Image (cartoon, rainbow, N blue to C red; front, top):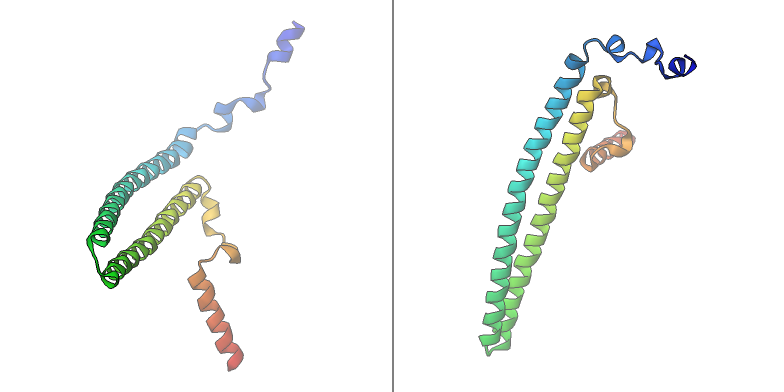
Amino acid sequence: MRNEAKTQKPETMNWPRLLPDWRRTVVPPVLAAFEQQCDLLKEHHENMMKWARRRQEAMDEGVRAMQTMLEEKDPNARLKVYNDWLNNAAKRFLDEMSLGRDEFSRFVQSGQQSAMAFWPGYAGKKTPESSKPAADKAEAEKESVNIRAA
């Protein structure tokens, strides 16, 4: 009898009584977050396939440039081929960094939206100054300089 008393849960732990309509409150945000994540992963997969194609194109261009430099007798012509290849490689690198930043931004935004789906009260709160985008900070700095100058 004494063991039975220890194993019984108190009434406050009766979840159906605490959350009678949990299916209506929990399931929709979970499904919405799941759909968001599925869409994000599909987009990520497409971006990775595009990235792989761009890497293949870069490798092909590098091989062609190397072959041209090996076949070329004139050092100035070799230098021009190398310079063209290097400029294209630098441009590709900057483009890749920009695309990576954009994709990371979408991941963060999706995470924020998922969090807001679970905690609707969080949506109205202001973000800390440190989390504002750099462009917003720069604009705010310009405005403060204009105000000080006036």
